[in-house]
Image (cartoon, rainbow, N blue to C red; front, side):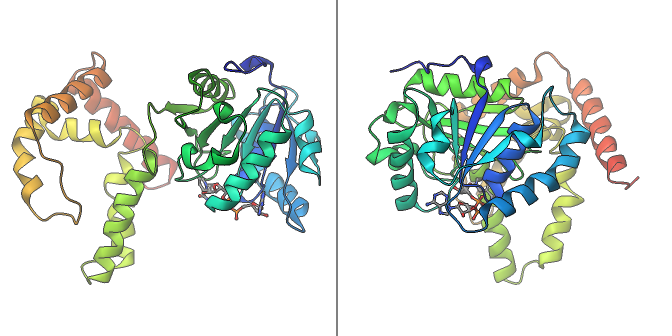
Length: 315
Ligand SMILES: NC(=O)c1ccc[n+]([C@@H]2O[C@H](COP(=O)([O-])OP(=O)(O)OC[C@H]3O[C@@H](n4cnc5c(N)ncnc54)[C@H](O)[C@@H]3O)[C@@H](O)[C@H]2O)c1
């Protein structure tokens, strides 16, 4: 098996295995997008917690716009995993972040799920290569890493293990896009994927600063909510620094501030700013700008930051 048996647009039933914060958020998302959701979670009281989570998410999902046919009554809970999987055309596993548990659970899901359908894991940091070790069909297992709450934050990072088939990675990316998600398809496994690696760098530095008495918890939060955080919904850290270089863009920014990489501004060891790295970053910004001039990007950033400030009632 390489290509999943169901076309992306024909998926009707999603199985959510594990329905805590993330699995419950996925269930709400898929229901709002018109899917049937069959949920399974072995914990006592899981059904009540899941229905509460879906009910709490529904007003936000309604405000964003429900898909045709979207209905909370299309959620069913099954006490038996094999029964929950029987009619599924896609599986999203969101069990606790415990490697042994994931290994056992994914093997059980793989053994019981209909032939060829894709099994995706919400894991925050394990590579699929270390999780599918007991699975009979590793080619159909893939990471689909969401962000909390999955019913609101668009991004999903999709990455396979060494034995995951390329078709499954492509199918999963297409499926999430079809279901309305923003998808990053990663070429290879990287611990923490992309977004968690970036978040983690900031998080670790923040903890160092508190531990060393360099900043308070409140100062750290304010430094982001009233500083760089306001730009990031509009432009990511790369384009943000592209504009920090004025009309010279990223090339000027790197030539101007490159020497700061040698200063002790963070506990992270800085990458060596080789000519190759410099050129790769400059070229990436040019690709991302896609013909927009620095003036265009400045105007977009300014409009975006004003929109965010207005939305937050802070103008
Ligand atoms: N919380 C986040 O911000 C976040 C973000 C992205 C990804 N994730 C990932 O999502 C996954 C779930 O995390 P969470 O925050 O929802 O945890 P959680 O503790 O809220 O939920 C875990 C759920 O799994 C259930 N469970 C326990 N044992 C199980 C088993 N053997 N099989 C199936 N389900 C079982 C629990 O009853 C619970 O409902 C983890 O892999 C985590 O790394 C979490």
